[in-house]
Structure formats: structure tokens, C-alpha cells
Length: 197
Image 1 (cartoon, rainbow, N blue to C red):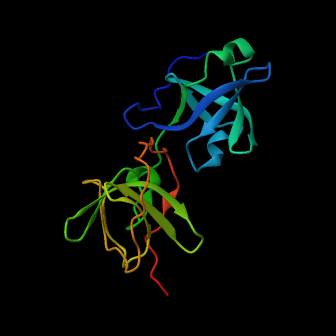
Image 2: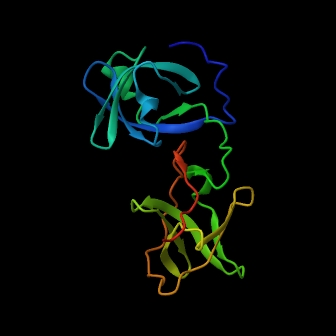
């Protein structure tokens, strides 16, 4: 182990992965990625564990997880002490482009109509290829909103508020009580909503 690295600012660091289990006998660990930047896990990258920097010796993907070997963690005994711990990295630079956001900046934001009527919170975002879809969950249930200019009217990051117009024909579905999901960190930028053709 090495000493804490001054390059990591705990106030702005982001979680990019969570160690779930040891893997093999040479100190490798299985990691649940919490970032859309796979280069975070490439050989030579630096990640912080308990405030201490480690260099990634090697990383390989296994379905949705990544198997990592961190320099200085060389035995299964060392790896067995790590499940549940988070791997951190410095946060990316703020996005300058208007209408483009990191996913972790908007997940959990309050969603409301232009009238001010509350709809719930942004629980998830997925892509259809043509555009992103915002999954909004609240007291009325769940609704899937296309991330288009005429639907997503305003995103206020400071207020953590998204103002939308619900298109005709879209309705809420009854959903199980929402599980509060921890927003993934360091997600790739999301483009501004696209105009409908």
C-alpha cells in the first residue's frame, strides 16, 4: 500500500466501481462498474480505495462486471477484505456544452409539468437508439418520457428539477413502490433532447 494521494479531492471524487467479490488466488477482484467510461479500468489507470491510490495492472470484462488486478493487492486474503468497498476517481471536468448533462447530475431530480404539478423523480434513463427515454416514478406510478425538445422543456441542475410536457397518449402505469437507486457516478454526457422528425 502507498500513502494517500493529494490528487484525489474527496469533495469532488466520484465512485466508479464497487468491489463485489475476490476472484482467483492472485489478488484479483470482481467489480460492479458504476461508470460508462470503461477506460477507467484499463491497465495503467489509477483508482482510489479507502483514500489510497492503486494502479490497475490489468482488467478484463466478464459480462457486465470487470475483473481487476490492482498493484499491491496480490493475495486472495487481501482481496477477501475488499467486497463492499468503492473505487473512486477524480470527477471529470464540468460540461460546457448547453443542454448536455452527466447522467449522475440528473438522476433523482424532481420532475414536474410546466404548471408545476409534481410527477415524481427521474429514476432511470435508457436509450432507444433514436433518443433517450426518461423513466419517471412518483405517486401516480411510472411514465416513460422521450427526451425530445418538445417534451423535456427545462433541466435546472442547480434546483435538481426537470420540467416536462407529457405528450398526448402517454399515461402512467402502476409501478411497485420505487426503490431508491444510488445514482451511478461519472456517467457519459447525455446529449440535449432531439427534435422530433
